[in-house]
Length: 101
Image 1: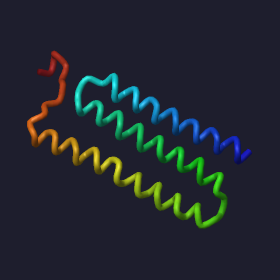
Image 2: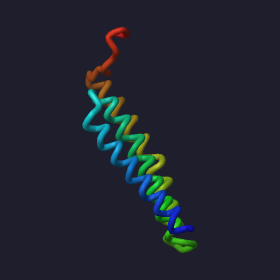
Image 3: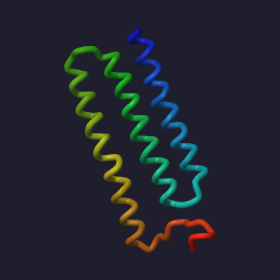
Image 4: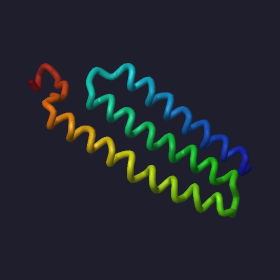
C-alpha cells in the first residue's frame, strides 16, 4: 500500500511539473508564465519529495527530505515574487484584458 501511495505522489508531482512546463510555453506574458512555473514547480516538487519520503521510511534520509521540502516551500514563491518585483521595476507591464486597459 505504501508503494502504491508513493507512486501516486511521484506521478502526481511529475504531472504538475509537466503542466507547469506546458504553461511556460502557452502563457502570453512574463507574469502569467512566472505564475505557472512557480505554482506548478513548487507543488510538483513537494509531491515528489512526499513520495520519496514514503519510500525512505524512518531514516536520516527522511529528515533530509523534510528539510529540502521546507526549503523549496519557502524559496520557490519568494524567488517568483522577487522576479516579479524586479520585472515591474524594470518597466515590464502585465498583460491585461481589453476591458481593463
